[in-house]
Amino acid sequence: MATSMKIVSNKAIASAAVSSRRTGLAKRSGAISARSNVSGLRKLNKEPARSTSFIARSGIDGDEILATVTEKWESVEDKPQAILYAGGAVVAVVLVNSVVGAVNSLPLLPKVFELVGLGYSAWFTYKYLLFKSSRAELAADIEELKAKIAGGSE
Image (cartoon, rainbow, N blue to C red):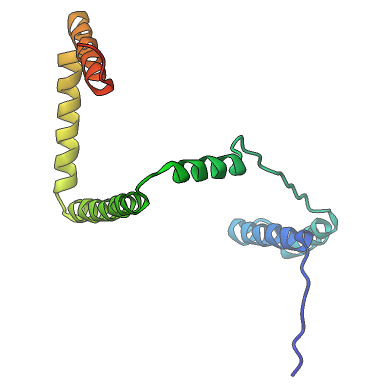
């Protein structure tokens, strides 16, 4: 038993795809006769298929990222603890994902959460963003929180 191997070029694939679309349109419309459809396919197969290629370049340098990560890893003093924290973070993300998926599968709960979120957004807008004095108060609260986190002078 010999198997035959067929090499198919981009031109053949493209013309086959276009001709299958054409025959599908002809069957649906019913206005095109079978003879004109066949002659159209012959003409279509003689036209060269257009192919495009491009190279995507990104502004991110992989070697630079690898060097930075290696440098940061070498500066870590307690490597087992860092690995433990990273593993714990992965486990936490998996657990949270499964809990959110379970809550989302309940029939009415996702819509209730959407309504709660919409209500809270409306309240926050009214309370802090609508009036100039409340916007100033919010900006002051944010600056105070930033100072606490950054450890600025009080």
